[in-house]
Image (cartoon, rainbow, N blue to C red; front, side, top):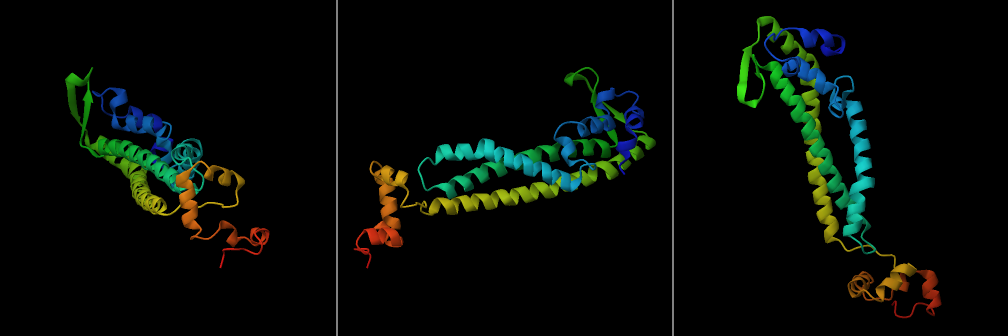
Length: 232
C-alpha cells in the first residue's frame, strides 16, 4: 500500500516551513496524482488500468479523428489498407505524446522528491529561493518517492519505449501499404461507374487484371460472356 494513499494530510503539512504550500514536493505529488490523466499511471491504477485507459484512448482517437482524416486523404475506392495504416500511425503518435507528457510530469515530481533542496518562488519568477531539507524531510520524501513515484516512472518508461517501437512499426507498415496497389472489387457497380471518368483508377484496375478481362476470375460473369472469351 502506498504511503500517500493513507497519509495525504500528513504529507502536505509536514516540513518546509518557509516554502509555500503548493510548491512543496509532497504537495505537488498529491496534486498531480489527483489530476485527470496523470492518475492513469498511479500505483492505485496499476499497469492494467493504464493499458485499459490507453486502449480506450486509442479507439476513441482512431474512430473519431484519425480514420476520418485518413479517409479524407485517400478518397478513391480500394485504398482501405492505406487508410487503416495511416490512421494507425497518427493514433500511435497521439499515444506516444500522451505517455511522454505523463512521464515528464511524474519525472519532475520524482526529481523534486529526491532532491536535497526545495527550489521555490516566494512571489514570482524573479525571486526564486532555495530551502534545504532537514534529515527527516529528506527521509520522508525519499520514502515517498521509492514507494509511490519510482514504480510509476518505471511503468511509464516501459510504456513509452513500447509505444515508440509500435510507432516505428506502424510507419513501416504504412510505407509498405503505400507501395502496394490498391485493392478493387472489379464487380462493384459503383466502382465500374467511377472507372468511366477516372483514367488513373481505370489504369490501376487494368494492371491488376494482368491484361485479361475482369470477368475471368468470376464463374458467373464468364458464363455471361459466352464461356469466358479472352481468358485463356
